[in-house]
Length: 114
Image 1 (cartoon, helix red, strand yellow):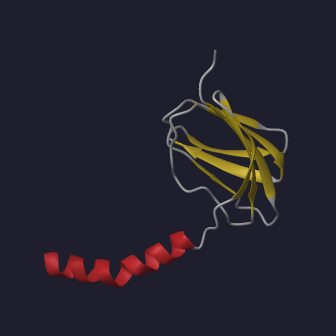
Image 2: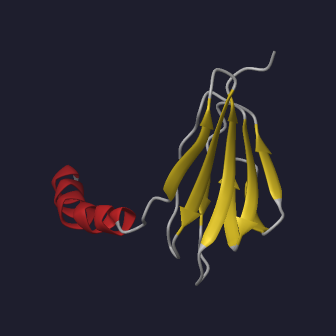
């Protein structure tokens, strides 16, 4: 049984990785970066996404244009232009564009608040 699992992993594994690699990460433009905050304008192409990740800092996202899906341990939420999300630090999440058009997001990472 172990040999069969290994053979299947070798045959199917590259196909799964190819599918994951096809999602384009968003293009980012850092517009502010100081000791307290980092603000990034992210542009997501159709089918693009960040991939599941987490950061140390709390994160505030403001959808500027289009539609994005935010996936967290609490579930999925579809956000449209004008919508906002908040994530405490160390929250695993994925932000992706499953629509046919571009989507833009202000990504605000709070490094420290004084």
